[in-house]
Length: 73
Image (cartoon, rainbow, N blue to C red; front, side):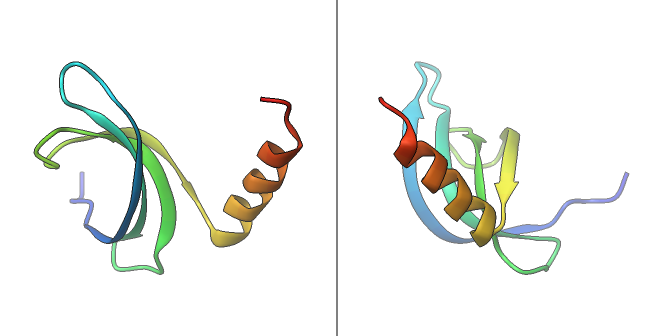
């Protein structure tokens, strides 16, 4: 399996933290030296390990924002 390269371009924010120190974060990340995308996933406290996540283009993030704005929360 080939190595996955990533660079966190901008840390946008933390949505939640677990008791074990893992945090669900929204970041702007460049995966394998490609254009940066918005990324929502869990990260270990030291930032060395990551969980499964969702990567969205700017357009997809805007569409999600629109959907969330229509919800009665």
